[in-house]
Image 1 (cartoon, each protein chain N blue to C red):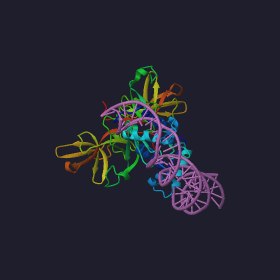
Image 2: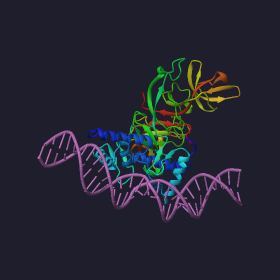
Image 3: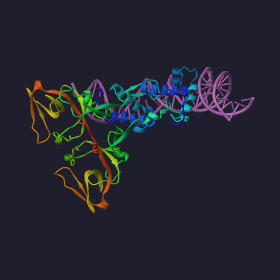
Image 4: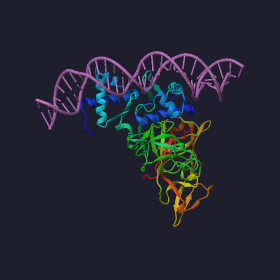
Length: 204
Length: 204
DNA sequence: TGGCATACTGATAATACGAACAGTACAATA
DNA sequence: TATTGTACTGTTCGTATTATCAGTATGCCA
């Protein structure tokens, strides 16, 4: 979404979501005011205009309850492919790598993931990423230093913390038993950036 | 759904769905009439009453656009409350503890969670549960030894691994800096069981 | 220090909308 | 053949809802 919300604006947005989930209708200005504790309906109006200006909702003028939530307007979850063992040399999202799909609501993570990767091994255990965890990955060819990335080294795909220096890059594991990997900046292929984690202790 | 729809009723229902998908609002009687080609708003009214009687929609009387689609109302995901700082002495799910809600698809975790708890502190860091993580909790008054539980000790709510012995229980942190807590079995209050974890590195 | 955004109160006017009533026509069914 | 349900037209009335104007207070930034 466009710009950031103030606390109050976020609360009003939640209030609209609640109402929609609850009654199937968007609230009126008066209802927002009541639920938020405003004395005046115009307070709600002001917030709505702010939310529209920032791109979170669309207001249909002169229509009652004419508040359209923009994020969740078109279905509110994506079926994301779960990539497991990545066959050597194949593109990470190749069909043969996809094990299953998992529904992930939009907005569950700040950054919208492109796919999920089932973690193998415990090289990132100190970063709280365990064997078997699903990590949500946003496809990207670039990343900033300090981010956890999915990188390709030769034929292998690995999850590490990226450390960028002047001329080269280091892929940093989060486990004392593993060694950092130094790669010349021009040989580093980044597949994506870590944007979320899902763990199910009962899985498998 | 209850009973079968006539052709016209089905068309009106589709019309409502379209409107909702399109504008985020349910249509008014007049809009239905226009889109269906009726000359009278009452034609739409009649169809709506029929649809309500047959259980497909719910009409909220005296509210504009007060048409609630019942089938897809909850879809295949639940809006789970996120519980943060738990006020001392209050029930964990009390309204004052709920910060926001997050959509979680059914089936994302093997066990269906009741609510989400925003983790505070790092006492479970070695179990890969970090400060700020959302853990999915299934409400339960019992748990098995070895499970990660949400337990109440006095006024405080805490997340620990449960170890059950003959006559007492131990709440085991996953961090060397913290001490295990021994509780007589009859004083232990279990709030719920850990059934999943969601982490957003970009949150906050 | 002035300007601007947020965060409201309070009131009025205009209009969007639903409810209700009185009809007509037609097909199914008992 | 009478009854009931569907499928409408057309109109009126009251209220639900939005829009807008006029203020106040506060914090932030240049």
